[in-house]
Length: 325
Image (cartoon, rainbow, N blue to C red):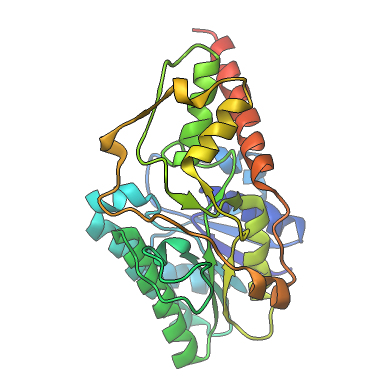
């Protein structure tokens, strides 16, 4: 039985990846930070099947302890301060976790077990102010946020350790991937949740920032398979994981509101508070390398993704309405 360690277990990607690995017979070890406010909602159905361990990307000693105690065959580093908007207010913490946290984890691997296969969650936000369209594995990075800059560091330190110590360390440059498990602070989930509230009469408007930015949006449940496929290859490498399509925030709104019979223009209010200091206007990935080498392709189309999220949030808000006071 293979043993896999997932950092960021309780996040969107961590929960889908844990389910995926359990289905393939893995012993899954989930790392969580030492905090009294842990939220296991996303992994509640499988929590009894996962071994939970305490650790922190800010504490390299805890990472070495986990390595020696649990001896994972594969490590998936999904933990990060991952909300772009917050990274301007918490730039140092974002760097400590999202950038230097990768170094601490790679140090632990290099010192404890260099046969471990390592996956680093890189991000399309590294491309930022894009210099070519679509973006490939060879497109230069131009991050436009502290989060994007921290992800660039994490990406290149992974390459550096791979080349310096011959580690099986791969990075997945994942473009935006969403699901009903997305946090409410992310724009896609903010839209679907608030559309559901408006439809149920619990809200009268949806305040958003810029509606023009375009993103390559896929389903998180599809993308975790690509993470796993990278670590099954004979040689480590970096891969763009994307749909190859781009859609604007406005288009997401149009679809979401339209699915419940509403006109988005009557409900959406643009609010400067939600504007980024430096916006990323257009992201669209070229996943041809992943298709050729990994045999991976996205299964969920954009309208299906929006419909999935809308259906989930309509049910969620409906349950909240019927919950006893």
